[in-house]
Length: 350
Image (cartoon, rainbow, N blue to C red; front, side, top):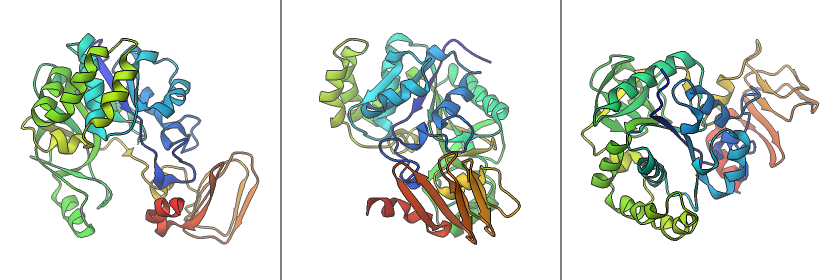
């Protein structure tokens, strides 16, 4: 299934503030072994795409402060494929920068853009659906989004309304929907033709450059000023001068909600963006009382429904605690009810 013209773009600039204190601006969740698997999330992301593209076709877009972290976690990726944003400007400028640069040397590239901080448990199915999306985009103007078949009425994700409820087939998109309230999410789940927006996009490079030029001309105008410096010693200076002037806008608003070429492929590959401690708990093996633990040395007595993440080897004893988060890291200590996890970002900034 591997193709020499397939390129993988990994977006790795987020700070994962809802997983504080494990994830911090200095060391965000994509560079952390969140689930106790022995590998960081960005490492797992790269490895799941290796059946689709050679490693020399992988690219990472991240902030300047994370350059060394990316190189440490993904040492096989060519150093000039680690693209450093002088400041974050959301996903449309990030994608425009990477794809415009790829286009210069690889005008026939077929591209997958993916976040760096999600997990996928059904890897073979995931590779299969990405392969189908690449088949669709290689010789067409289609943009294919990966839709995740909902397993619950989730209010934390955006939704894609597909033109039918067919699974594992590329089909047209009717519209994008923002994060719904609970009642609306229940209706989406019952309908069967709504899928979660995983933020994974597949297109050929000429299509996305054309669509960005048409629908986000101000962003592309800035990238076009930087483009003459690509692959030269002057690229960093040009980025510093022009990139911060890009409009802050997501690729969803810039292109996906405007283009007439959007399609989706829906599946259930065991995907999660690990956006909060509840989702982390769901993807860690639980004991008979529903406790999920990362860290050798943790001992629980009379506890249930907890998620505990502490440095491995540190003896930690917890008694009679229920439905709570306990996390210790070099950056701090968190102890709060799971029901309050939406407030963690606020807590960490207070």
